[in-house]
Image 1 (tube, helix red, strand yellow):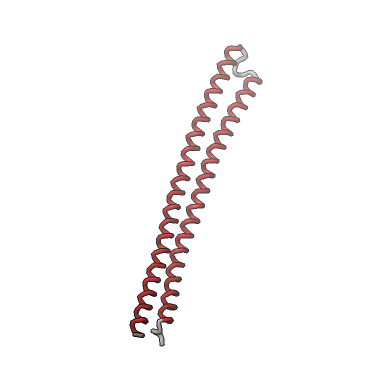
Image 2 (image 1 turned 90 degrees about the vertical axis):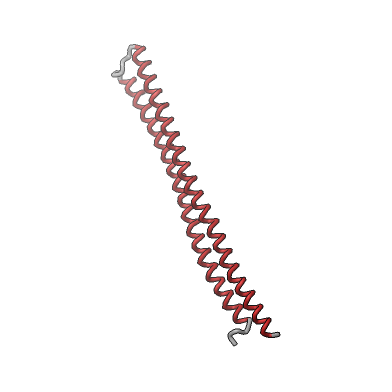
Length: 149
């Protein structure tokens, strides 16, 4: 009967080892999936910011066109220093806002890429750790079963 107990102990240990490895792989797969989702979300954020920046550029172009038309209609002309000053400030402000939108999108994308890199590193660590834990469980279980003496 002692032999059956040892066999059952070894089988139980084997199942624990396999289960530990599978759990680690499942956790790693979930983290790798999250990393892919983070990368996709980062790309979406950057693309959205690009679209917003293009909209801002169109708005600025419209304002500049309107300012030219108003200056021409008033008879001031486009070379009048105050008109040049207003026109320059409008163009600079539009460029600043456009660049801020682009930077925001790129910054959010980098944040998502950093989160993805962290998830991938954690997945690798969990997978490696689960194999080592399973190996330790196996050795411990075999030792308790009396197989080593």
